[in-house]
Image 1 (cartoon, one colour):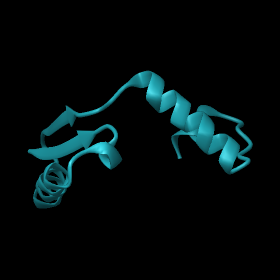
Image 2 (tube, rainbow, N blue to C red; image 1 turned 180 degrees about the vertical axis):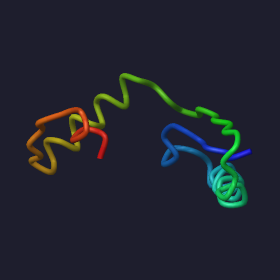
Image 3 (cartoon, rainbow, N blue to C red; image 1 turned 180 degrees about the horizontal axis):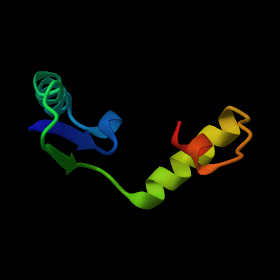
Length: 69
């Protein structure tokens, strides 16, 4: 099982962040199944951060693929 964590890792306690990173690293070769856990995740926050990134980097958006990068 591949383990993935989603959300604002920059706001998590250091010990929890280390545990999440270790789990992701130890399971990175697995591909059959994926387990995702969302911690400190919010759709609105993600939209705000995407808009801030666009403004900060003066990005020109032509498709939704441009937002995903």
